[in-house]
Length: 461
Ligand SMILES: Cc1cc2nc3c(=O)[nH]c(=O)nc-3n(C[C@H](O)[C@H](O)[C@H](O)COP(=O)(O)OP(=O)(O)OC[C@H]3O[C@@H](n4cnc5c(N)ncnc54)[C@H](O)[C@@H]3O)c2cc1C
Ligand code: SF4
Image (cartoon, rainbow, N blue to C red):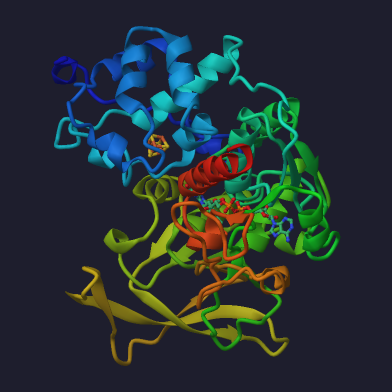
């Protein structure tokens, strides 16, 4: 119980910068058995584990840490895979510093337990040892349709299939996974990891219909008529705009278009060549996780220079500190306290620079965030060959929602009963980013799991 005094927190090895910027492979190694065990032994098994309360899924963290420290992989695998639909994904990409590890009792100078990395180890080592999450097969006559195959859709499908309910999943893209596949780059999450889960669900009975946009290729009503319940997990990927003059120029791109096209390139399928930024000066506007994914992608794509322009300072960046540090290590330049005002165009209407004013941070507002003030007469320009706008996302609000009585709120989020996840139309449930707004994989996984519980209760009671 006092191992934390003699064993330091260690993080998994990171690949050398010079090597990792040459490819899109994951940058972190996975803990081996010995490291996972010695890091788990540091857990003091506190009576009131804050880590568990801060984990949206309420994962059985102290219990699986104990199992790993005792080298009981089979039990750890079962414990970890019960409340979580894909723990090896969350272990890799959850913002641990803000969630479980942030609230670990040892995060007071001793160094929090490396919860996320042990979580990844458990399922990776388990799969390697031939362990598999178990599914009963389709044992009921109930059938549920899931629209969207992102983490919310995959999670609801996992828990419905575990209850023996048949699931048909409709996905407009050519591959399943939502932002796990076409958003989060491979250096954070290898696509093989996502695909392995999808294959497991297919083995368990999932019927996956790709290249099928509900509302266009197939009507919502037709699906509703042939299923006992529906779950909507269509995400929120409509780019927010800064409404800057010049933003419409051809060489000003949206973050999602860039990341999706480069992922398509990495899959070896057709992509838009306008996104080849080799030898170009790239400026990314925005300071969140998506901006970090864009700057690091541009580095790997051989850009001549990559600069992130953010209107606040390093301390106030909204994204994960770990990803900012990784971007710094990989040679990304940061211009902080810079609020963009205009995209400057040349005579051919191509963007050539971003004009911004310098800012300073003042007193804290009601939310506790420092107010941003623009400094008078501080206009400055940064030259660019291409510009990527990464300012966050809103839900797209497909027309089939209103046509079927599914109400949305002022910013387009689907309104659900927060206990049951049922929308304003009986038998239709929703979760993930289309309900919360752009959020996290773990919260989409939680919504899917909880919605599945309600659907099971209503169909099998
Ligand atoms: C670049 C980027 C990086 C991120 N990095 C992280 C991270 O490191 N950690 C983290 O926790 N979170 C991260 N996030 C956030 C996280 O990815 C999302 O919160 C999460 O994916 C939301 O899951 P979802 O299932 O609600 O939606 P999505 O993942 O967006 O999936 C929705 C799916 O629905 C499909 N769809 C939409 N409309 C239709 C239709 N009409 N018919 C059929 N299919 C449809 C879409 O094609 C998509 O596949 C990141 C987000 C982005 C954009
Ligand atoms: S799901 Fe996320 S918050 Fe929960 S234990 Fe895993 S890494 Fe931590």
